[in-house]
Length: 578
Image 1 (spheres, rainbow, N blue to C red):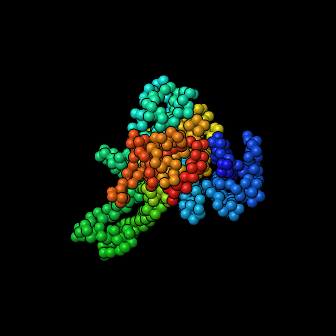
Image 2 (cartoon, rainbow, N blue to C red; image 1 turned 180 degrees about the vertical axis):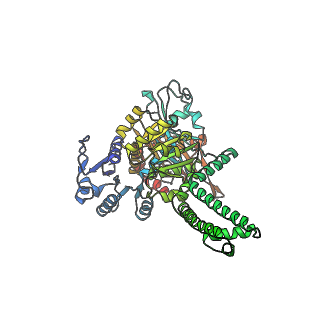
Image 3 (tube, helix red, strand yellow; image 1 turned 90 degrees about the horizontal axis):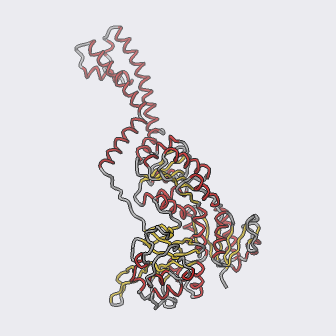
């Protein structure tokens, strides 16, 4: 019998997870606090999510996995504790925004997997901005690879290309294959590669693409342009301070020349010393004025009053520039890239993660955030992320972020209407700059893209639901995606003497279990002593014979995971997670 999975909280993400698990023919029950209008299925329990009676009715005591999909972290934690009281052995997939709390729970509780919507969806936004129409992500070689679908049509460059040729390319991973021919619909990728099958019209492939690192070094021309830009920003933000300072210098200079012309036996330095002391209030060499005629004394009084006013104004402006907001605005403005950069609107979880990914790949970014009290501002400043504070829907704010010369603008605030307004204004100002828009409701995301002709409109709930569904099915998940109605899962499995793949060639095991091998980590031994490890790829991978302690990285359809359960290798897969 298949293990029971309970999805608790049927919001957009939760209901999508439930539907995906149903498609994979998993034994699944949903819990909702209100009736689902579009679903009259008998496997949905209505009641208080954290109530023991509701969880018992859903079968919590015999369930294998509980998926907590609510956006309310406090409620998820309450349900988690109630579920562990009723079933201490249940495996929990917990949706948490707080990554630190999630990591601590993963270390403290056995069989607890924390997942974040922002962390899962941000790579897709980043890859999409870089020009890849990503539908998922894959974690390989300590890098996050983008997953996209290739549909072979009459004009596709790969039409007629042998799959074996694509298999040899180390910069991409063939993840899944769906032939158009109904007679060959059940042909697995490894069989197609070994038989030399060619790609035909209608065939579909899922491809993992290795991320490329952009050089962070800038040309001399770019550095000079940045220097002049910083100088202009300094002039803009310090104009008032400089003007008053100039007035102060003129006042001191006028007084110095007046005293020098009055008494020829007084040196220019003495006059300057007296003028500065008199105007600033510090005093010094006062006999110059005491021995002067009444006119000069009146002039001295006027200079004292004018100097006091000018000094007071200058000190106030300087204090505001250094300790107030102007100096901070100057620093932020000087850090804003001027060309070939990515503009991220919204410094939330998705925006922050997207900015970090793009910066990690060597690209320049700038974030626009309207909330000066955002809890992510300090983190952004500490990480060196330039931030323009203002409303991204206002043209002046977009201009301050140099929209016209940007590579793309990514609107990822938590408000769908605000994202739509930002993208429309950006398109009005710079029609050629691609716009990537976050829209929570997946039903309307496609319509928004069609009506307003945006390059990409992405729904986080649509992006992350497959990841939660894959995690619910078990094992350490390295990535996932959907091709047609099939959910595929990437995972790592440790080969043990009792593993069903032990002693088999990779290609033979792949044809039997319908999985796609990605690569193998194997030990190098000299005289029965481990001296290192190596990875096996390409054709060598298919001809490799699996043995004890090898780690096989593979992708497999979610509905074929039962093969691993029956073979009792799930513990081997989970060993990699620890």
